[in-house]
Image 1 (cartoon, rainbow, N blue to C red):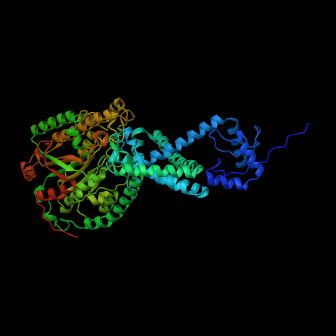
Image 2: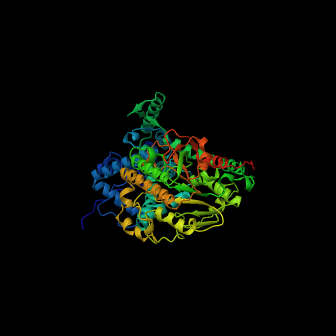
Image 3: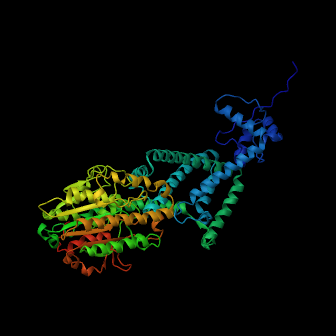
Length: 630
């Protein structure tokens, strides 16, 4: 056999986390520990340098036949061999991963941004946190730097998830995400998607979101480690660059330098973290404060005989129309159709002998969480989060509907087609009987989230409750759901005598638009939303024309505005409220409120907080305050 050429000495081992040599400090440590012949061979071998010009230090003596084992060492050997054979590809991969790492961290530091009205120029900012991260990672030795970078990346990923939730909540509910209270709403969101898009699609979307979250955590940690590795290659140069960047950031911040009409410097990540911290602290403080507020009740000790004496003998119906907001009446896209419906309904009711007065209430919620609007209206307390809602539901604070029951002069009933499980709130609202989605006899198709058309729910109410002979008048709370997002498909009015068990709506549902075609289309959503409000108002007013009596008093209102994608980014939280009756004395009692005649409140009609309605209503109809608690 011919004599073989001796192989060079094996290279000094490197850390799996950082296969490349880094920085002057780390390189010096590695060099001093390596044999002299290895160091000289490495320095002399062009193949031992990667295409970025940095010492690879790990591929000397490697051949294409690198070990094929499965251990970490074998994998690193194969990677080093590949880098030697394909230096251009290795350089491209190096640059690509570095750029992607910087972009990922940079975008995370610019969150949150508004989903509605987002413009690319919002990303032309210099986040101050980037300078701080660079300074910390540059100052640390290699091993602590890797640990700090990985933990910092995971923390930034967690903040990014919260920021994305914050953006979603801001777009849909007009408020930020609450770390204490809002996790349970994610299940409601999943249920909404299942009703709107189907179970299979929702399951796939949920799985996709979970995968993205896991990938975000892994990717952000890897990105931070990568950035730390790059900064550590030349600590002196990185330190100089960081000082320059810090000086530029401070100067631009002090001088309020702008780019594309916006401040160049920002500190969004720190601001978002502070906002979440403040929100958690305020939530915990609010729990105790609101508990005391709920115990104070202006009518808590009012005797039964002194509650609502001026409505005795009347059938009073409180009806909430889902998402019926001010935008439906005043937005240029939705208003024309809705205003025509309100005008024609007002005329039809007047022909039947009814009169109406209307005003505005400012809702405690926006875009969703309808139960907060319902409870605020009926409790007289401002209930704008889930914690307050739970506190009130567990209290003995007098709800407006319970006041009717307390008198002993009314039977009380609830019609809740949107309720599909146990509803313990029945006790707080003082309802003798509640009809949920499964107790109204409906056999037709669902209309996306809505379990049944409003027309059917009202006809079932008439058949099961309102149309029956009773010893007492009736107080009813009805929640209409056909105008719930995604507003597709929308029911159509049919002959009241044709409703039957609801099967008549089958062809209508099939012919309607699909939720998936509307849910992400702003123009279509606005158009269909307006149509859904027209349908709900028409169904309710036709029911009153058909089945109302001289003693029927109808109070109906919206629970909140629709989501900002429909109502606009600067929409108010106002909703219309109307009181309709044949007996002129009923409306005379509220003559001093300054409300507008008819079903359409004037633009300048009085605006009250929704929480003011209970007390004003009780006082208007003769109730005497006797405070309790507080």
